[in-house]
Image (cartoon, rainbow, N blue to C red; front, side, top):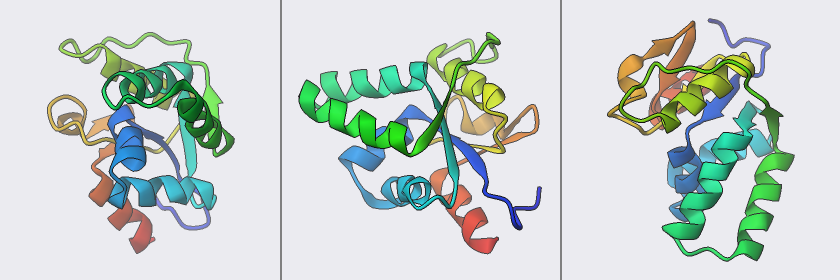
Length: 142
């Protein structure tokens, strides 16, 4: 798919969002692409809920801080409501929510750090599944 003259639409896996907030570096650069309107970030309530839960439970973020983070992300994303239930990934059902969001949002890419379940698929119904580095290289190249 050519990216010329088209803003790519992309779903970020929860781990990309968490890494952008907690650890900075490449995932934050990817999130900044959405803020700068160089990509269209597509998310669902399921992804946002898991993101919220991980930051609250694992990283002990306060509800007030989490609300600000979620508001910032939602302001820079398109939120979709998936209607199709996907069961492709048997080992980790929450990864199916990523695929459902991608289908509902009619995106071109899924960006994930999940080397066990999502990245090995490489492509799902015409949607490329890329690591953060692969995605960034593709964006820079185009």
